[in-house]
Image 1 (tube, rainbow, N blue to C red):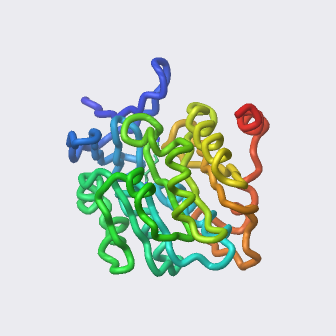
Image 2 (image 1 turned 120 degrees about the vertical axis):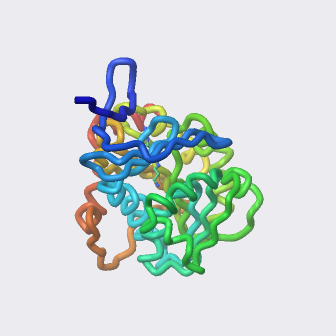
Image 3 (image 1 turned 90 degrees about the vertical axis):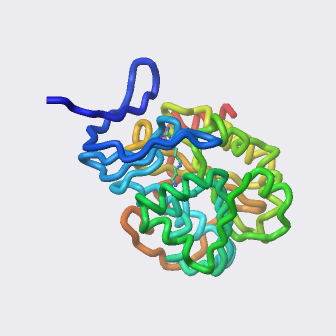
Amino acid sequence: MIENWFSERYSDNLQLSFRIKDQLLSVKTDFQRIDLFDTYDFGKLLTIDGTVQLTDRDEFVYHEMITMVPYYFTKKKPEKALIIGGGDGGAAKTLLGLGFKRIVNVEIDSQVVEVSKRFFPELSSAFDDPKVELIIGDGIKYAKTSDEKFDVVIIDSTDPVGPAEGLFNKEFYKGVKNLISDRGVVVSQSGSPFYQPNALKLAYSGMKEVFDDVRVYTAFIPTYPSGFWSFTMASSGTLSPRNEEVKSMQYFNGEVLEGSFKLPQFVRELLKKT
Ligand code: AG3
């Protein structure tokens, strides 16, 4: 019997493999390669340049954690959000559920949006909502040139190699800072502290140079390297959660909001050194 597998390589000696029923698509775009698989255990799986971006079964963890945590850290209830990356629509969809009035989503690769419309229609339906403005363009340029203000800025990028490299440095964060309203927040996915300490270091040290307060939180995302994932959040002024009842989602709840900031010692050491 022939078995088909997709593997994300973490190193020469380690990989995570999904047994697949079928490969549904493979496209080489101007920016990257996008593949879509139908897996046995995780439903549909989207990869970019061989790295797992989302699956039907566990996308909720990532999308809740990249939106719900910053939501509770703005001074007043946030209304306007900017998403950089996030072409699948998952982050926008969760923000719509929180009552945001305007969401600008800047995605560099129109093909990510197209693929998501075909294979993750529930997520990409966010782009049909009139409150969401989808811009196909370069987030770095957008951050430099826009003068709109947002309460929450979400950097939903790929790993800091290739097109996303420029989303993990001080120059970019400076641009982002100009787009944030009074006591608004920015959050970026910042990789696996275990396998990609560099991603976390880049995000943390870059934000430290630009913002007054920077905090790291983590979540359990089964299909990402090591399953242990970090997010880095920053603001001008001190970060503190609003005193407000916390919504329970599928992963996120009040305990997670608190607990996700409790970091293992090796992560604290890593941050101390940056
Ligand atoms: N963006 C973050 C994915 C990073 C995964 N890295 C990896 N598998 N090596 C996810 C996009 C979902 N909106």
